[in-house]
Image (cartoon, rainbow, N blue to C red):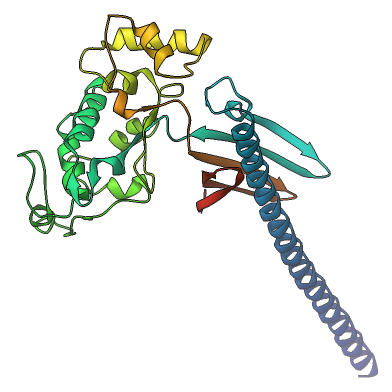
Length: 304
């Protein structure tokens, strides 16, 4: 009997020790989790600061460039991708892309009405990209203030409200290209093909011919073949255009661009930055607008 009692006591003692060990292990595990959460929160905060630093660096580059000259072209420092930089546990990379070298979708509508000149340019651009030119009409209808389609290819709220997922036309300028996805005839694949050539800016903009793609250069003319636009871009990249005189000399009598639509400098730049600190990796994009001799204005910022 005594042996059995002593045996039971040993078993109880072992059970108590085991339970204590489990409790200690759980406490240690929970402590590690909480510590890891704190570490991750700290790393996240550091990564965000690194991103902001990258944005400020890019804005400073944009400002410095504007103080040095009045022409923007692809041979300048801002146009070169920033290679990944690693130091003290930080890793950062980024790039600056001129947005005035793209067609501004918001140019299609001015004071609520469709700008027919801009509509023609957009139609040509779509054709040069082997995309449906009539899509331009649907996009313009999406942005304009009225409810009257500009053509059979256009569409207003009456059309969109009859869809399986009814919506209304925006009837305003857009802030993000993704806002165009509901447009009649648009889809993600088509929009991805458009992205390298278009942008959305908060004000009317002219096309910087020093940074525009050949497809857009050809769209600015009613008599410039796409092959000639590629030749023009190749010559431009060797010696950029400083003014209309330079552009006219290169074009000669072969063709002409709509000079009302062209520029040789830029006002809007998209900064893309990626940062890593510890186990945290972040990215974002920020649109900056030049502000004379002052630091560029941040228009918007979005996480990637």
